[in-house]
Image 1 (tube, rainbow, N blue to C red):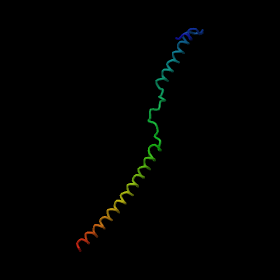
Image 2 (image 1 turned 135 degrees about the vertical axis):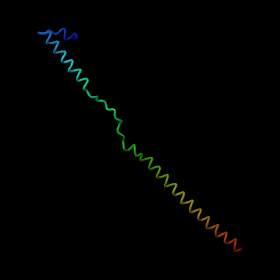
Image 3 (image 1 turned 90 degrees about the vertical axis):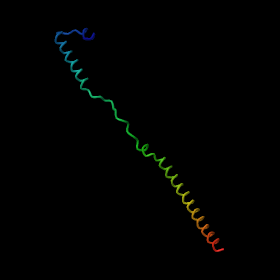
Image 4 (image 1 turned 180 degrees about the vertical axis):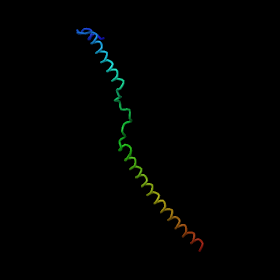
Amino acid sequence: MDRGRKAMPVQNKACMKKYVKRCQDRHRQKLRDMKSSVDNKSPRQATHLKTKAKTHALMEDRFAQIETENRILLEKMSHIMRVSEIDCLAHENA
């Protein structure tokens, strides 16, 4: 027994000893049956961080810019082809 219980006057030491043992056994049983209260799951992901909207918007802008540049190049190439075709015909006729 601990010091506090030794100092307590009791009528029947045997009954008190039995009562304390029963309380200690009940306490140990509760400790064994206790379920952990620590959350070991990974933290919940924020959807706004998963989607990365800014990166997606920047990529869309870049793709639009590339498409515009490709269209301009294609127009220049078709112009060159038309002009060279006319020049070839002019040289053949001369």
